[in-house]
Structures are given as C-alpha cells and as structure tokens.
Length: 142
Image (cartoon, rainbow, N blue to C red; front, top):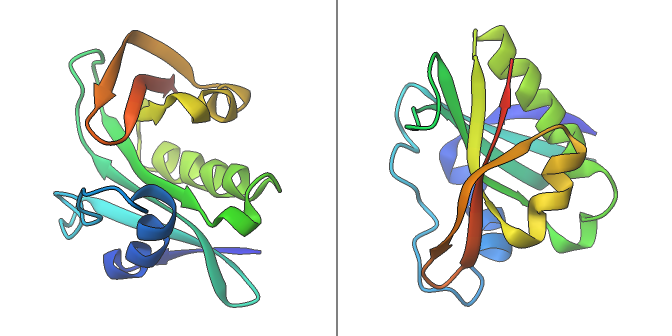
C-alpha cells in the first residue's frame, strides 16, 4: 500500500463509483483545483483504490486553522480491510504538519462508526443532503 498526492481528476473515477453511483450530483467539487486543496490516493500494486481530498476551509462550529475532509471513498471491493483508515491516518498527519487545529467534514450516517473509531466526534444536528441522505458534521481537534 502506498499513499500519494494525486491530481483532482484522478479522484473522479473512484468518487463516481462510490459516492455518486446512481445519484444525480456532480463528482467534481468546488475548490477541487484551488491551490489550498490537496488530493490523496491510496494505491495497491499501482491500482488506485481509495481517495480523499482536504482543503483549507472554515466551519462556523470551530475556530482556528481548519481543514475540511471531503470526497473520501474506497472502492467497494477494498472496503472493510483497513484501507480507508490507512488513508485517513496519513491525511491526519498531513493536516497536523500544516498546523491544522481542526479537521472537519460532513459524514454520511453509515460512515459514522468508521470515523468514530479514529477519534472523530459528532457536533450539531443531523442534516440531509439531497439524493444522498442524512449526515452529521464530524471533527477532530489537534
């Protein structure tokens, strides 16, 4: 397994397969090509199997230097094998190195336990994203 910084366009096939399959929403997110955005990919034998994006972005719940995690996705064949955890731990080290005080994101309800196992907490009420379902804001302070 190897985690690398990748281009925004390299995240799109995994995002489409995991996050947008059958959902009429864009797979390209605002800010994907901004200089304060970094895309990560986890490769197994040169195959991209998991992706995530982080960007400098503030949320009203928090103060200080913040990063937002978004577009985290692991191909279904590779889910449940610790791959997403490896990628997220790498991202946590990246944002800490870049002086983050908070890493936050909108988590799908079905992913809450995954993030909680890695020390993230829920803040605020559940909210709905059209065509996707219930979410919570989750965060980790450093």
